[in-house]
Length: 147
Image (cartoon, rainbow, N blue to C red; front, side, top):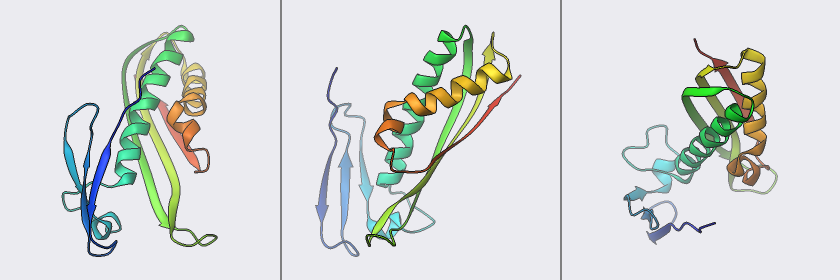
């Protein structure tokens, strides 16, 4: 299996500095990052590690879920997956930590009932490689079959 690479160039202090994250393997773009915007409600046109984790998690989960739906005898017509990744203070160790991830999925699936859909959804949450990498974070799931 391949290894994927991203790189960040950072200048300055945490509070006053900024950087650029480059998605090196895919070459799809370079994105601005800064801690003040990372910690603000409005990202102001910059990304953050949390947003990049959310993108990775939602994509990975969608792939895993589609595979498990097929294994269960269903056919995924469409899956809409979002991941909300929260950052907060780390009272135990100082600094910050990821405080939670909420996965939300709505799916149109042929050949599975609600129970089969929910089982595949939960199994995908447990089996997704990004979920496995983030085992230290509380991950919740809101899954619903849409007709």
